[in-house]
Image (cartoon, rainbow, N blue to C red; front, top):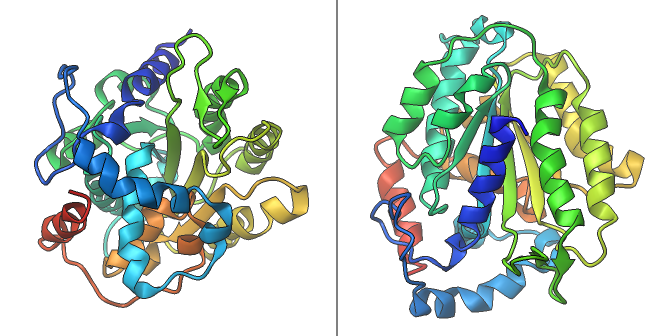
Amino acid sequence: MPSFLSAFFFGHRRSRSADTRRLSREPPPSYNDSLAVPDASLKRSTSSRESKYDNPQWLRQPMRQSTLEDALELLVKYDTVILVDDSGSMQLSSSHGKTRWQEAGDALAQLATTAAQYDADGIDIHFLNHVHMQNSSQHLRTAEAVRRVFNEVSPRGPTPTGDRLDQLLKPYISMLEEAKIDADGTPRNRQTNEKIKRVNFIVITDGQPTDEPSEVIVHAAKRFGAIRNICPIQVGIQFVQIGDDPNATAALSRLDDDLAQENGIPDIVDTTPYTKLHPITADGIIKCLIGGINRRVDKQPWNSTAVSTEQMPKWIGEHLSRLA
């Protein structure tokens, strides 16, 4: 089995207890801290919300602005896997005085460091072409670690978005198909009886694939939809567009708006043009992080209140404190 798939499976086995660990403003426990004790108060404070967040009817209702940021606590239940477009077209200039690659780095830093606050295992970063980076880009928890990985890569080559998505989705969907499903939709490993943690895939791309990701998504969604009683938000895919190519915007929009309806598959895709993150707003960060797993956020109107890079740690901490 290829090494990156081994790392992917290993990461899931280790992360299934992440939603029972204590959350705080401090960094999550170290990789080797296997003796972390679940915090009972956290389980009590979130138990009433879990059934609501698992309810597909609630997820489709319009979201009030006052509850939009609170939706971030849904990330506690997910492993966050970010796939970064490192193709040659990312060297092109954008309309904001930077290259697309530089904008991708900005987006990655904001999304990854925010998501890592909620995923006790840290996030995983994959690249379209630099597959050899997998061993050094697992379970990242800090902005410094994310930047270090990003700075080791230079954009080159094609844009095999569909192929790389397939490499990440296929083993996870297979794992779900082999699982036993609890009455509440939770999948469990048949051998160990451990919960299989949900996965939130975030794809940062300029939207110009050299293959066809829609075919991969349709195939994976059909397999996922055929699993009886599975939680409908067990997996989600969020595309964050870098650059302002209107053709790319239209192509990504079709993945979000048309794919599910035309093919009769579960709606597991959301797209966000990165132009809507200039300046970065709280709503924009939230939509990029959970739009693929929360239909309410997917359809939520944008708010113009900006959150600067300096304000982000305080903003995240305020929302994390509500879970304590």
